[in-house]
Length: 319
Image (cartoon, rainbow, N blue to C red; front, side):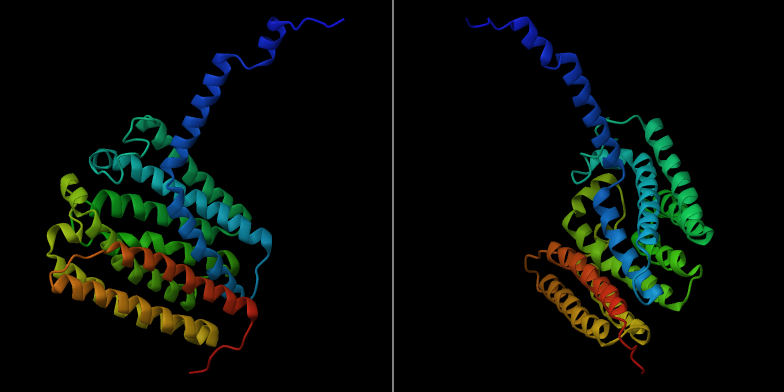
């Protein structure tokens, strides 16, 4: 004899509508707080940290040290980005490129975002101090303070040189990675800092050319807003040449592997910058995002070459 199915029992097995709604709200909240940290930018910062650690070790550092440094570095970057979102909530809401950020959409109260950012900063410093050394912890605090106080609050809305000097905060991960391994800051770390410092303007100005109207509407004086396209492309070209030359300063600390990648990669970057400038000067339609995307690839490949070079342990070039 068949047993009748109890519909009441079946309904008890499935989650209540209120529970499902609560889970959905929790997911939205978690995504919103993650959105404050700008995870895509953090990924790029971590990509350059590990090669710096490899070069400092002249080999492969301990897995634990790599993990500890990456966790602390990610928390420090997340702190800086969250605090940046608090300060820039008004212009983020105006710009189409940033209108979907959590504070611009009202998904996170500003006070909560501020506490979240400050807490991440404290946790990152304590974590790095206890798991690596206090020099790397101090450098992480300096990077957060520089990004928020100097770039976001002082430079961004006042000068077209905002990204030039403000971009120094994005160069700090290589120095932090080096300090985590050696407990010092030596000349190769400063050279890598300089590579990213010189890479940042052509990288970001290409993006700003694409979103010029956004920055103009928000009142942010990015270079493409206050200068002619020819002036912008000329500066992009100048920085590209200097950056490509600067990368060669690291050759005495590496082998032919890095040297070959630096020469070929730098030539490719400069070539694309020349193409952009030529198109702008001729009055043709330009696609600056090609240089932007190429710049991301270039930086990843260049620093991957640093890691491979160090891991292979090949003799350094004697110039």
